[in-house]
Length: 80
Image 1 (cartoon, one colour):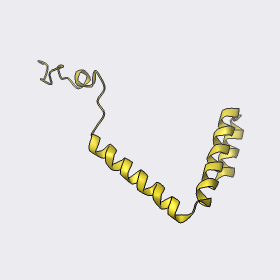
Image 2: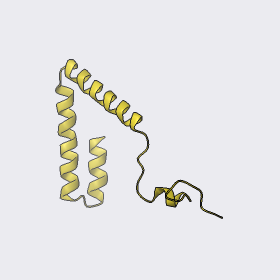
Image 3: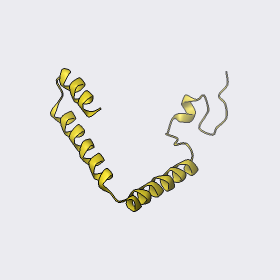
Image 4: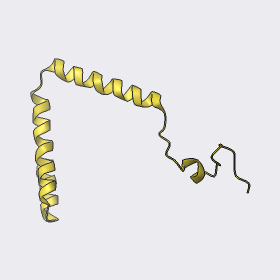
């Protein structure tokens, strides 16, 4: 897969940044492969815990979302 990615990006005149990103990604994969099973399990548990925390936090609302949805700042529908 990495060879395919390199070929695609080389065809499009891959920038130095993209080269670095691909090299860093490959290095990180090698690092993860070399980890003992117990450390991989610990990483998996951390990711699961973070996922649950994100799920509990609910959707992120930005200022203006209510207005874009046709609601006033108080949450009441604007007259139509």
